[in-house]
Image 1 (cartoon, rainbow, N blue to C red):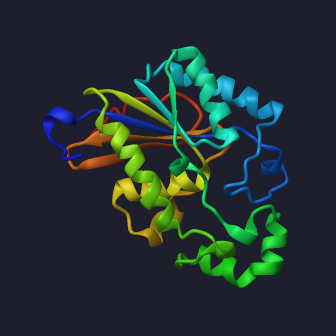
Image 2: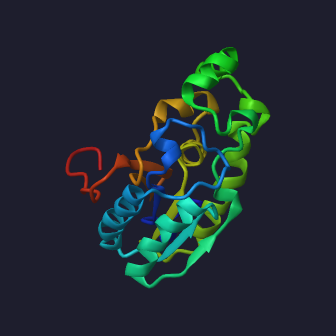
Amino acid sequence: MNGTKTDRGRRVVLWRHGQTAWNLERRFQGSTDIELTEMGIGQARRAARLLAALKPDAIIASDLRRAAATANELAALTQLDVTHDAALQETYAGAWQGLTHDEILARYGDQYTAWKRGEAVRRGGGELETEVADRAAPVVLNHADKLPVGGTLVVVSHGGTIRTTIGRLLGLDAHHWEGLGGLSNCCWSVLGEGARGWRLLEHNAGTLPEPVLGDDD
């Protein structure tokens, strides 16, 4: 995006999938293909009713079942087709995948601590966060480029992938991506296009965005 007047005002909604059994168990999912729980399906249906009110122009999603099923709830309300892309999958984390949080700390405590410090770590021998952004952010930008002026793109993906993509689109140094915090199941973040590029308008939201009324709009 070049930030010219003719392409401003577009919006990207990055929506995390609903709850899975592994979420409840605090088990690292990564690229493992886990389905939604009944609660997760309900979360997706509720959120879809809200997001449909934004009148999105396009929906793209990870091809993992938990994201695809979440996206389908919005597609059913908007009559939009969902474009699935493996580049929107969650971070591949090798040996960490399938382990609980406590198991990761016990077996890979040094690696976990280094990651939390902001070091470039291949968790479990998997992907770097910058590599996740390298594959996911261009997909989001490519679809955002196709939006009409003032249009809205909904991206259905995963917590880690969404965070790294937001960091990349905002131009933040990778060391600071952790500062964005995580997304709850079926919550979303909103990026808006402005004169100097993308801005974070909402983060970890579960209600419709409200306009900013004040001196910083």
